[in-house]
Amino acid sequence: MNRERFDAWLRNIYETQDVEISCTECFDLISQFVELETSGQDASAELSQVKQHLYQCRACHDEYEMLRDLARFENEGGPPLLDDL
Ligand SMILES: [Zn+2]
Image (cartoon, rainbow, N blue to C red; front, top):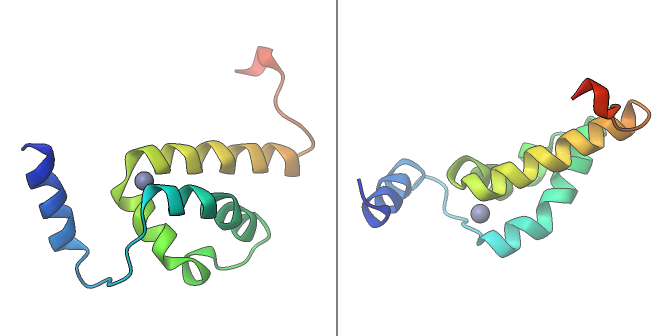
């Protein structure tokens, strides 16, 4: 499946959602999304368009995972020691 067809396929799946954001917009909102999530709020409800984009976009999802892990480490009192990685 080429990229264009893949995008069209994804659009079909998510066409029920009418709000779409770009990667740039998503990147701006990821930290906010993670903040909501780590503070125990319903990030998917507050920022549903980010949640939707994360499902569709690998790059943004990677960024999200990285920020989420960082936030977790902060909550747990600092990053893990290099030895633990
Ligand atoms: Zn993206």
